[in-house]
Length: 85
Image 1 (cartoon, rainbow, N blue to C red):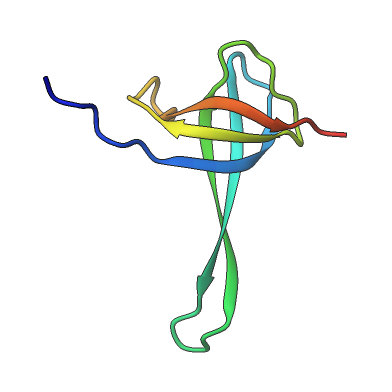
Image 2 (image 1 turned 90 degrees about the vertical axis):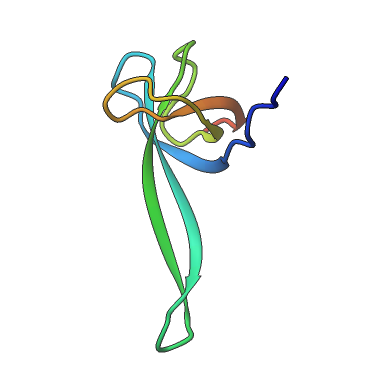
């Protein structure tokens, strides 16, 4: 029996929770600039599935890659690491 491939996991902050069972998570990373060699902050926004509607804006969450759930959703919320204040 073949094992399922390793899935990407990311940590980010919820920036929108207005949809039903869906949150938008902003994931940040640091990249070295090709010419100036300075560290630059880059960010990407992922649409993630939140089955229980438990995430709120400002929550720090862990998301994992999954099969396409809709036109834009390819991630799933695994856990809420830290609740917003």
